[in-house]
Length: 483
Image (cartoon, rainbow, N blue to C red; front, side):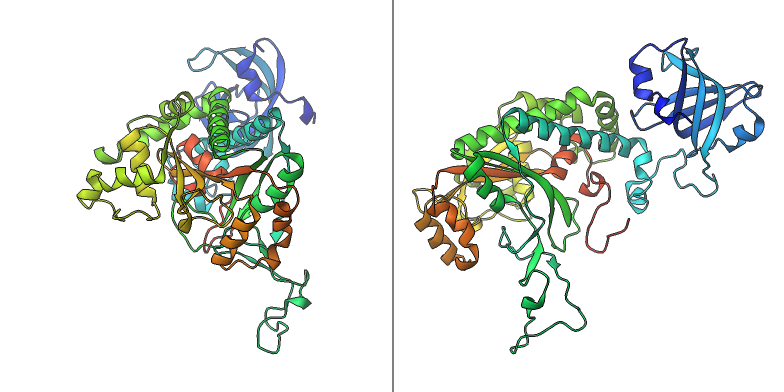
């Protein structure tokens, strides 16, 4: 059948194949016919662009032509000829067509019309066949490749941190438990609690919420490492910004301070977004138009001032604004939305945890560029962040982007043993369970830093998709583990 001889549509559109005999395979998007000829729009996933197949009913039998319906998978042998119509420079004149897989037009749910994103989530196993989701997942691939390329070219080492862990790095307690115990009849201790000594790992374990702590261990030997893997959070949230299963990129670097950390994160974000702009031109042009059409349906005061492509280029070409949390609080407290009580969460005093509405105000209205916020109150940040000399703040940073708010969170890590253990005691984190983490401060401690980037948030920003469920192939959310 010579499957390995097929030519991809992307290659046909990028090179001159006119006059050559080729084999194409793909899925039918549309077919239109008249007495003399049938025109078939074919897509094989290699590009957002379809390729025109011209089928002469004197050459292709009627029974085969009848079976060529939207969604069907076909193989075409034929000659590439110069196109008579507009749109693309060449097309294929079919000498034979083989049906690889039928698609009953009465039952196939993806007909050539506009489908809502909500409907497409219900058929996530098919939605990648649409232009929108084909574009999203090609961009997602390019961004993932760019992440690895960036760190590899900088001399970082890729570390696979465990998915099953006994620690909760965030301390939030929203973890998925991992067990082989009989849930109907678990072994119990005398006090009625579950006896995890009889479980597979002989202790309580969960799916990881972060690879950071293990990443720090690797950085204490290899100096510059990164993780890129799935993380899990059992947060009962149905917002457009949260998933129960998502991917995190977490670099950890020895011999970095807070400023080095900010410099790396800014450079990294500009690189990967620039990579997508360079290598996903057709997909991003389509997504840019899609986002513009969506903006038209919004109220004037909710519309973005920039289109998707303009926003991406803007981020790659402008230095990020760097301000402290204290400066941000002053800006927010004196802002019109705060004074006029337009914020859902009013800013009244120093120490408040910033919400998405505050982050977006700083980025979209006040500075009109990405913002790096630094030096947060230690009370609202994790135990491992380095304490500043003022005794009130830590060397933390968040990077805020237009449209989605926080995209990166990081900090210089606390390398001083006495400060770290004191903070753990204050936050009731048992030192004996974290003996391995504390060993990195006992033996050869050094200033080090790192950050975490939620990969889906990045994909959301680059594709302009409004809901995080639309940038991961099979979203896991409360009540939804289909497919």
